[in-house]
Amino acid sequence: MNTRKIQVGPDLEFDCSVAGAPNGVLVLLLHGFGVSRHFWDRQVPALADAGYLAVAPNQRGYSPGARPDPTDLDAYRIDRLVGDALDIVSAVGHGNRRFHLVGHDWGGSLSWIIASRHPERLYSLTMLSRPHPASFLRALAMPDGDQKRRSGHHTAFLEPDAVPKLLANDCEWLRSRHMRQGMPKAATDAHMSVLGNEAALEAALAWYRSSGPRQPLGPIEVPTLYLWGDADDTVGRAAAEGTGEFIKAPYHFEVLPGVGHYAADQVPDRVNELLLWHLSRHEN
Image (cartoon, rainbow, N blue to C red; front, side, top):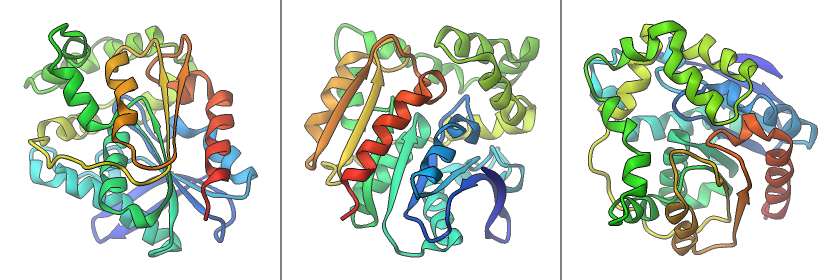
C-alpha cells in the first residue's frame, strides 16, 4: 500500500492510500468522521491482493491539500463532497468506468447519494454502519427516542467551542469513544495523526455545520451489502434493520455481534471476508 497525492483541481490535492494494478476494477473507500483513510488500512491491501485497484482518500478537509477555509460552509456542502469522490475516480484513470463503492459514517452518506444519483456508475455498494437516510430519519422520529439519543453528538458539533473540546487532553473525547467502541489504540493513533489538530478538526466539523435539508433519496438500485455492529453507539437496530426496505436490488444485511461503530478497525478480517464475497458476486 502506498500513499499517493491525487490532484483533482488547482486547489484540491487528496492524500490517498492506494494499492493494486492500475487496470484493476476500482474500489473507492470513503471514511467517516473521527477517522481517516487509515480506517481502510486492512482493506486496501486485501483488495489489491484480490486483483482490484483500491483507493482510500483522506477526504475534503482531512487532506491538508484539499482544505478550503472551514468558515466557507459552501465549500463543504454535500454536493462538493460527492463531486470530490467522482473526481478522484476520474483522476486515477477510470473516467466513466464502473467501480465498487465502500462507505462508512459520513463517507456512507456520500455513498448513498452516489448510488442513488449515479447507479449506472457502480458495480456494487458496501455500507458500514450508516443506514439508508430514509430509514435513519424514520428511526429518528420514533417515540422511543433511541436513535435521537444516539445522534445527540451531532448538535454538540455545531457549538462554537466544539473544536477546543475535542482537542482537549490529547483528543480525549475521540480517543475514549474509539476505545469504548472497540477500536485498537494503534488505529486511533493513526487517525489522530490526521485529525488531531485544530485545522483538520475545524474542517471536519464543517461537514456537519454545512449540512442542511437534503433531497430525499429514492430506492437504491445497486447491489448492496450493509454491515452493522450491534454494539454501534450511533446507529440503533431500527434504523439498521429498516434499511433493506429502501433497496430495490440484491441486498445482504450482516449483523456483526459485539462490534461497534468502527468495524473495519475492530474486525478487519471479517469485513474483508464479507467485502470480497460481495464484490465477487457483482461485476457484470
